[in-house]
Image (cartoon, rainbow, N blue to C red; front, side):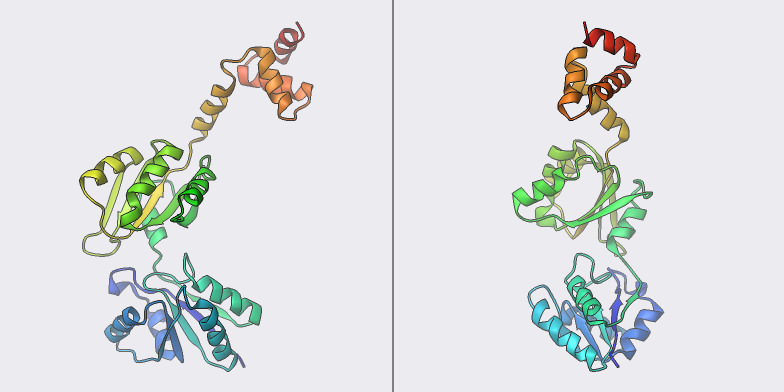
Length: 279
């Protein structure tokens, strides 16, 4: 009978945030796979847990993943932990979970801290709908393509960022998004926990004066539907009625639908648009 993979969420700062269940699982498994064995050993020593450790991280995930799958097929239960927080989120643990799914091995989540969610709920920005975007690429072109794809995103956006890349990221975001509200969260659950609520422009000015330190979670408000309507109006406000209708026809609309859309934009009757268009 195969063993199981336990996804164990560990504290993101304050060691008191580990759950009773997580401690029980770490005590009971046969092996713990860790992103950084030295860091995890410190946590285990704090909990008075002695268990075999093996490394599992980005650069060994393929060969180590096969080893871990083999161990679980032989009946061993394995706990997967990241350096902090919940494994398999912006983390190579995602690949191990996929391998387990392919191999028919049970995966058991052991809930706990997630930096992005904790940052979101304390940000002061809408939590009704949100999208997790993780880390942006270090490649400038890929980073800009990622941001451009979110230009019209109405949901709150969650990003992770390292301090040495923060300024470049904020400037790129300001170029694409404009001056949106942002909450920059750092040292969550730690002594120097900080939630800096400002705008992208304000954040750039602040960190030009005070160089950023620590890992950041960025919570950025989505695009307002009112902003979208304003942009839509900007498209046609300098067009004649004929040009306005032709704009929609050029996008694939029938003449009838184009007349109706232009009338709605301008707040007039379709007949008025028709008479002017056919003049």
